[in-house]
Image (cartoon, rainbow, N blue to C red; front, side, top):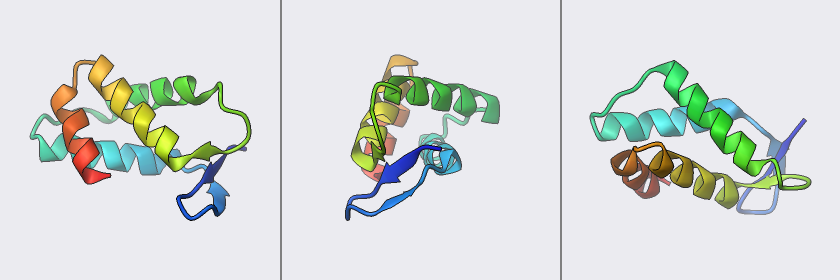
Length: 86
């Protein structure tokens, strides 16, 4: 099981649904909208990018990865909204 290292240094279990929720808010903010399946595909890309990290994943690293994945997937406007959200 993966762990997340929060900004305050506490360690919590990884909850992928939180990433889906944050991406969903960014998509809604831009009125781009997308399917649950697309957000799950993007989540898998984030997780794949994070695989090289040993131990827990830092929240900041995950957020940076989400921004990169969104931009690379052609969702630059959503990535900008996500940056403002975080």
